[in-house]
Image (tube, rainbow, N blue to C red):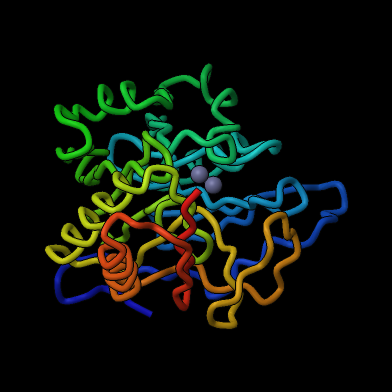
Length: 279
Ligand SMILES: [Zn+2]
Ligand SMILES: [Zn+2]
């Protein structure tokens, strides 16, 4: 995969296979954890705890880490996150490290673990509603303005993308060129609640991506199978032949074209790796 690239972006690797196990986890449910690189971790909730089996992301800066989403009911997420933070802090000679807990959006399968972080020392849990997200990231005009958060020598761009849910955001990590897109763009069913907002948001994302060195677009679920145009039905736990996690800018541009060509008259459209699914 990519190692250190000429542009100065830090390389990393997205595992090809993120199999989340089946319905039975033998009574010991645990997140799958893999390093994208030394400062960026991907966590996946096991299927036995929730068929949504969402992905969470933990990104380290010099001064604090950012956890993007806290998972679906019900699993211990604080322990694996604490372990990763403690290990990183020790490797970097730090006694402690701040933590920001933010969300791709407010749906229950991405915020269920929030309560496990509320009393954690040095931790800020960002509120789930749009007003809280705006206030925390300092976004004056929602959703047209963008913002940034600096974790200490590591700047993430914050891009409002309402449509799937009103408080949806994407994050772009300038250090790795990874963009996190939540439930707005991932290999599966892109449920669209507000079609007008979604169309503008996908266009905003596509325009942002055209001006950046984007290496991977990583969402919060995988519902697609490896077979083009075929997804696993809602509620499927065991997905042995599932699509990879990462999507490319070409796939985002394909989505943008499909969305814009509907000119506001949304209908269900199957693309090779995603389905546009108005609700
Ligand atoms: Zn959602
Ligand atoms: Zn979701």
